[in-house]
Length: 185
Image 1 (cartoon, rainbow, N blue to C red):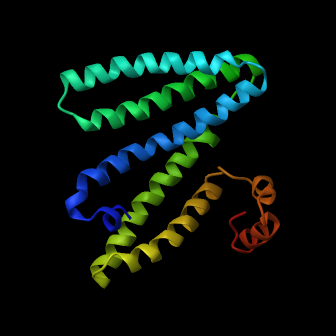
Image 2 (cartoon, rainbow, N blue to C red):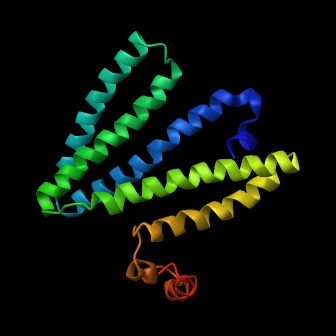
């Protein structure tokens, strides 16, 4: 997809997007955890956590820009680290104030492994079709739905999603019936 968007002359932009996209996950986690903390009346906690993360961010930016040759990549790395630190600090705060313990394996490890395996498969599928067809758009349109099915299949096979969770999704009962017929549940 990045090749389609950025062509060869824009490889730097594609690299920034690839690296920076990691921050999306951490910004989403920090936003949700901030909302939960505010919802339980701990309004100052996310602000303090963000201030701590900002301090770490400033120090890290100085070190990366002054003492490495990362240049603009340092800014992208700093953006990812800022969101990651806020997420981690908010997570610790949620555990403290709600006596809540996150399931690490099911919430983080299994989806990460599933997405990694899906990414590797998507890379080879798309490149295989590109070599065969000679363009990128059609292979991409073929690869995306295959990747979606593969990702959710891996999540189910690795027990990252169970029948109850799937059933709660829109059209979940229908999906459960289909998955049972495919012997995935």
